[in-house]
Amino acid sequence: MTEHLWMVGVMFLAIGLPGAVFPYRVTKLGERIDAFGSKTPRDDVEPAEWNVTLTRFGGVFATALGVAYLFA
Image (cartoon, rainbow, N blue to C red; front, side, top):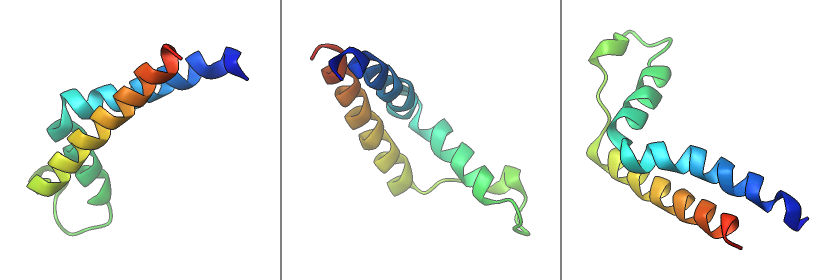
């Protein structure tokens, strides 16, 4: 079990780092995906500030978990 912890750590880092470093871009991508099927054009959607903040905190948390798994 412990021999696969580095893979879990790398996966957490791959998910967490973009959210921590580029939270606006990650959230805007999510909003654009959510705009499919809507009458609002994809280029006109903007993420809410609370969503960008939540994405940043989630990214920092996932990055911290990834580092913890890598050094465990």
